[in-house]
Length: 196
Image (cartoon, rainbow, N blue to C red):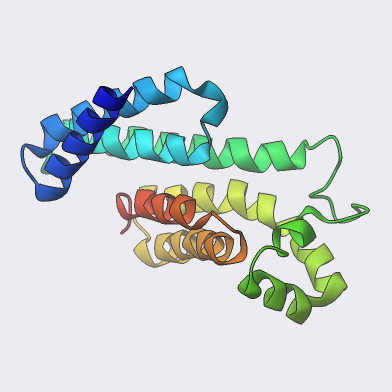
């Protein structure tokens, strides 16, 4: 285990230094994926982002060739899947915590972790928290789709708006929940790959 961790750190250092970045990314991805597979119960959404970013670094072709367009399209599909999965899970929550009429809105619980979260919760008040709770899964599902549609239609200002909406959501998550800063940073970094 220590040897694999040391190899992972070496691959990460090589990647950070720009030393054979594709090979370093491929090695890092392989080691990260194998660590995730060995510890399935510890795998979270952050791991999905890390995997797709490392895969992008290892396999994405450079330039404006056809393969680069295909890789970009596949990256969009991966992003869309992540957000659809997260948003639809909230919509289908058997406890209906993300519904407007939830006994205790799920967003209320998420806003109790940090000073920023508590301040936001106080500023919104119970009615505001209740109103914004179902907006979260709606943004998770709709904003990435609308950003992708804008990219396809070559509407960079519209794409930038919806990309910014998703990035703002992640900034809010990072500032409102303990331990969510790294997830938010990875999630925002994924959007840099497809930014207009």
